[in-house]
Length: 119
Image 1 (cartoon, rainbow, N blue to C red):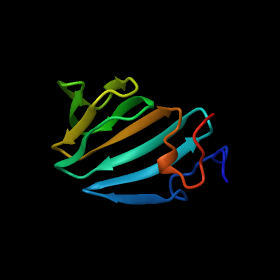
Image 2 (tube, one colour; image 1 turned 30 degrees about the vertical axis):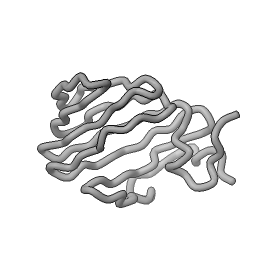
Image 3 (tube, rainbow, N blue to C red; image 1 turned 90 degrees about the vertical axis):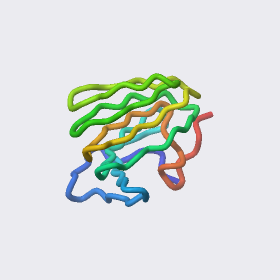
């Protein structure tokens, strides 16, 4: 069971996972308290509205995103960020194609095989 990532992550050496629907995901780093993930959205791709027990902060690296947090929709561009409290409904549509950095606490154990939920 892996409880944390390596200390350094090199983009050209770290797997990029196609998660379907025009989305790709790359793990940047994690331990039992925190996780950072890079997500690529193809033009028109959508992260459908969902909720989870994790706090989340997302930063727009590139592109334009129409972000919904608890029914409030805002247009975010490169340099903008949003916060999602635990169990809040949220999702995003990316009309331009773009990149987000997502940070979760606790980590999304469903993103890493063998990562246990914190006690």
